[in-house]
Length: 121
Image 1: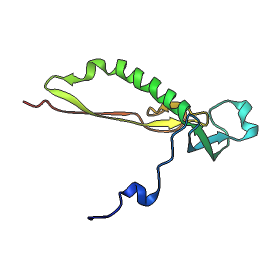
Image 2: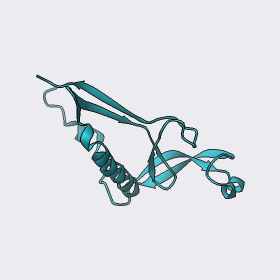
Image 3: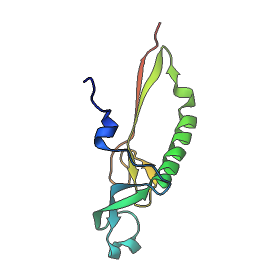
């Protein structure tokens, strides 16, 4: 609309991003009595935890670097090229990120989906 204020001036300024920014995640946490039994099995509960954005960034950067090496030779297969990559990941209470595989010991299912499309001619 003509004469209307830009959207940011109507809703206020966006907050400044700082080094101590956090993101809230729901994470699965073992019950206190179960912590000594190990990571697998046992009683757990879900709780909200604030994860430092810097820790999450570091964890995601490690995954991205590993994927770059692992997928380097998969950019093309015959007359097809990799056009899409879908990953299943889990964030832990400390901000670590793990890729999920199928049949994993944590009981979660997931994995990697690769989509190949014909190369443009």
